[in-house]
Length: 212
Image (cartoon, rainbow, N blue to C red; front, side, top):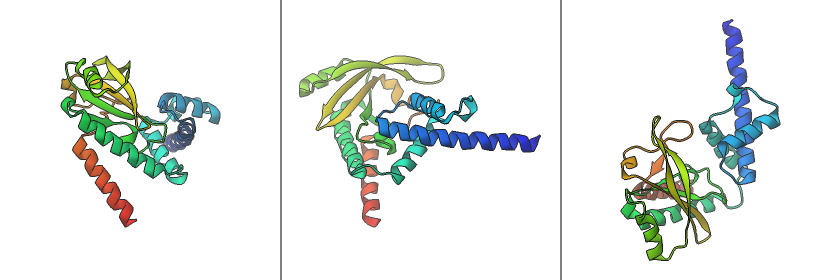
């Protein structure tokens, strides 16, 4: 019985890896970041229909990194650095709102379709659009649901704009959310970076490029 259970676990693990790799390929080729849709589409293409074989988002992110390493797009490293440099400028611009960078530009899985995703923390949500108006930045407003913890969620304003050919999405969270990052779809706190942390990440990446 134990051997049968181990065999089943190995089979599910191998299937999750297959689905994760296929989902990563679909996301790269389709230029979208919908993990749930990608994993379901990948599983359907592979003829896999059991819940245990669906990978977690972090498994897909790992597959994305591996895919990008094996099949680098044109000037991908240059694009990622440009996005991170633009993110740093935006973090400095929004410094009054305790901004944090989150998402694919931070974790390194971004491609040319990815938006720079920022979290701003302020209790006066109207202060953000006023900053756009003062700087003459045309931005479109939307909204997004945020999971603050396992028991609390809410709808947050989200602003979209382009700068120098790079897409940005700015989500406005209450200042209290600065103490703990909102949850990802996997229920874990999102990885995020301040301007100082992103600046150090850029320095480390430059040093690594020079040494390789």
